[in-house]
Every structure is written in C-alpha cells, then in structure tokens.
Length: 478
Image (tube, rainbow, N blue to C red; front, side):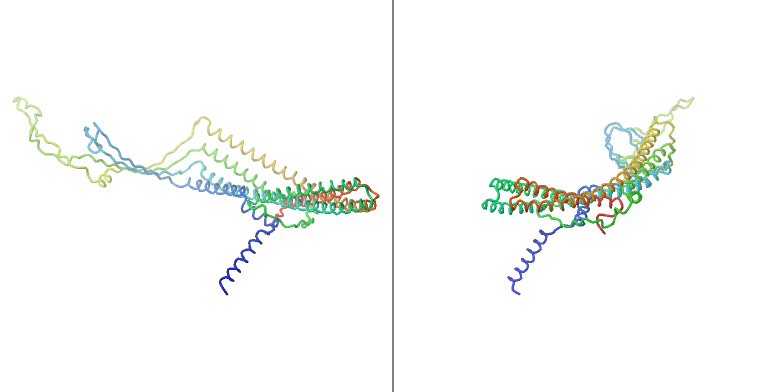
C-alpha cells in the first residue's frame, strides 16, 4: 500500500472516531457511573475517608513509644565554671551536649484503646458518607436525565405543533382565496404560527440549559455536543407498586445509608464518652533518658614543682617556732580530651515510671464527660429522627408514585379526548363551520394535553425511581 493511501485511511478512521464521539448518546446508567467517578462532591467526600485513615494511624501511634533526640552547642564568654574541672576561669569556652528521651504510656484509663475504636468507627462512617453522597448524586443525575428527556419531547411537541400550524396557514390561504373563510382568520393563524416559533425557541433554550445542568453534574465541559438516549418507557419493571408501604419501609430499615450513618455516629458518641471518662483514672508512664556532654577548654593533665615559689609556710613548730614548709606545685594544662572519649566518660542515664492521679482539675474532666454525654443524647435523637424521616419519606414516596401513575393515566385519556376534539374542530374549520379563534383554542388545548402527558410521564418515572431507591433497588445494575 502506498504511503499516501495509508495516511488517507488513517485520517478517515480518525474522523470517523471523532464523529462517533461527538454523536454519542449517553444512557442513564452511563451518566450515573460517570458522575460517581468524576463528580467533585464525591471526590471531596473521598478525601474525608482518607482523613479518617490518617486519624486511625494517629490512634495506633498512641500505643507506640515516643522518642526525642536533642543536641546543643554553646559558647560561654567571661568568668564561668569549667564543667569538667569545676574551676572558675575568665575565658571563652565551648560545650556540646546531646541526649535522648523515650516515653511510653503503660496505662491511660483505656483512652488509647477507645480512641482506636473510635477511629475505626470513623472510617466506617466516612465510607457510609461516601455511599450516601454517591446515592444523592445518582438521584440528582436521574432527575436531570429525565428533565432532559422531558425537554426533548416537549421540543418535539412544539415543533410538531408549528408544522401543523404552518400547514394550516397554507390551507387557510386557499380557503380565503376561495372565499370560504374571512381574511381576518388568516391573520389569526399567522399570529399563531409566530407564537409557535417563539415556543420552539424557548423549548430549545430550556433543553440546552437542562443538558448543561446534567453535563455539570457529570463534570463534562463539552455540553453543546452532549446528548442522551431517547429511552423513556413508562413501566414499573420491578413491580414496586405491588409492595405495601410497610414492606418498603421494613426493607429500607435494613439498607438505608442514612440510618447506617446515624447508628455509626451513635457508636462514635459512646466512645467519646468512654474516652472522656478515662481521664478520671490514673495514668502510668515509663521513661528512659540518656545524656552526655563535651567541653572544648583546656584540662589539667598533671602537676609540676613551682620553681618561682617552691615552698609555702604551713605553720610553726611549737616551742621552736620553726617554719613548717610544704612544696608548691602548679597545674600542667593540656588540650581537651578527644570528643568521643569525653562523650563516653560524661554520659548519664535515667529511667523509671511516673504515676499521675487526678484529684482536682477545675471540673475540666467532669465538664468534658458531660459534653460527651450531651453529644451522645444528640446522636440518639438524630437516630430516632432519621427513623421517623425515613418512614415519612417512604410513605410519601409511595403515595406520590401512586398519584403520579393516576395522573399519567388520566392525562393519556385526556389527550385522546383532546385529539378527537381537535380532529373534529379541524374538519369543521376546513369547511368553514368554525372560526379561527375557536379552532386555535382547540389547538391550544391539544398542545396543553400533550405537554401534560409528557410532564406526568416523567414525574411518574422519577417517583418510581425514588420508591425503588428506598426499596434497595439501585439506579444502575452492576
């Protein structure tokens, strides 16, 4: 194959791929899956899970010994004591010191154990929060997805109505020319066509905005080319309305994430009370310390006779008054001992245990315990409130779904009746037995009936999704 032909083939395939990507239509499952993986709110909630893991590592660290190393180097100028000789000298000296300290909690009122248990519960709570955020985003995506479908069908209705009125305008011109209807009726039809054009433009704008809202939930930037599949069958696949509200509520009690979050928060509050009470108990800590020092000043290496003043008088012999002499010596100074020799010779160690018994601390421990107990009571009330809210939401969702189904079925019957009435009005108008005003009224009622069918259909679909959501049926099938 020639190079030119090969490049042409590659270019053609590339263009086909681009065209296919631009013409891709998203399903509800694809939208939900993509949002779960890319939505900013979900990413932020994932960071909370990472923070909980960090807190757990901190709780584990409380069981480990602490180790601190310190070192210092100083210059002393003027009259100071040589720490290696104990002599006062007017000089500039340097000193280096180093040490290490090790401490470990032997007993701390079970606070470390309860802190670790609380950290484990916080990880579980963070995971539940992530699941809750994913569920909320999934519902929001489903609502936005159905809103796009609603606006697409509404646009189709407006365009169909525009086409009908344009044909009717052409037919009216023929009737006016034939003298069957007055010319004033033609202007009424023309105004109706202009109004239909405005409705189409408004419907296109609403559809674009709904696509933008859904694309933002999915974190997509190319919302202008974004589109969804036109799959909106009205059916209760899982026969959820055959269930009773109590059965749905019992099922929701087992699996609803908000209840799991509330129960976990209650357990966390109980651990906080145990941690606060642990401060009433004695604490026992073990410790070990090591230190050493090095001096850089001259040191005494020996003594030698004092040639300038070889003797000194100690006293007198009683009776003869003869002087008692003693030889005088002077110190022989040398350089500082080697660094590591001094470090080894001057080292010191300490170890032991420290017991601390709390007796009175300004009611701080007691107040902390009382605060923890108040938070525990709040968690208990929050769990009860979540239970009540769930029960109310389930029964409300069931009633809404039933009502939405009845409204949809009624709107379908109404549309059929309006279609028959419109066909009858059109026949009368075509033969001049109805004026344009009454005919336009019939058209408007038909359009409203079509819009009502679309509205009730998608309202019913979404309410069924909510009811299935409470029953534990996921929006997307794994």
